[in-house]
Amino acid sequence: MEGYADNSRGVSLGLDLTGIRPPSAVGTAVTFAPCVYKPVDKSELLKAVFAHYKKGLQAWWDSFMVNALKEQMKVGVPDPQLTQRLLSDNSQQLHEVVVRYNADLQYDLLRIAPLLKDESFFEEKEWRLVLPWENIKLPTNYPLQFRPIRDALVPYIAYPLNQPNQDGPIFCKGLILGSGSHSSAEVGVNLFFENQGIRVFARASKIPYRPT
Image 1 (cartoon, one colour):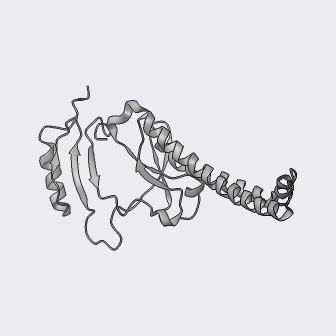
Image 2 (cartoon, helix red, strand yellow; image 1 turned 90 degrees about the horizontal axis):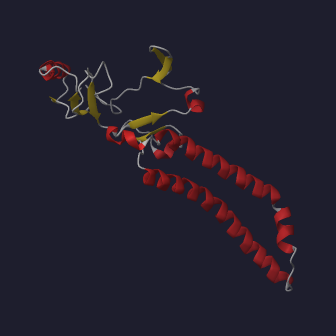
Image 3 (cartoon, one colour; image 1 turned 120 degrees about the horizontal axis):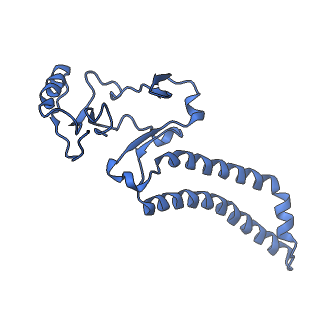
């Protein structure tokens, strides 16, 4: 990402992501994950989502058919209409199951859709923090803010990068200078980090791109 900011004079920071990604137990649609570029990986991810949807519906249907078989054995003689009558009797439950798993499917697709990116951007190895619109309208400890760009107003949330109960500077694992940086830019950056108490040294980008 060091090629994007300020005509390739920005920096790319490597951070410890442990405290940023929402725990799976909280059940939020907010997602912090790497983008998926290769078609085969996208296909596998989507297959997993739809397999989860199918598995939920299949579990209900299998349970229903076990009960239908038990009822058939009680009757003792073949009854072609039995399954249809049982379905009719359980129509409300079936409706609730379908609605629930449809909602689960939409939830999963909402989380992964923004992570699917064209394969031509593979070298970026981008991570995205996905904030679904329904979620960012809810009250939050970190309120929605806005910044202007050339032709739009961009909403964002200023999220602290410190670990819970952490004192002192953020834990930075590395810093790469933008490909358009001055040849001696790392001197100033290293002095700045030292002044902030952040123990990491800048290194030059290996990207051959140079801005014109």
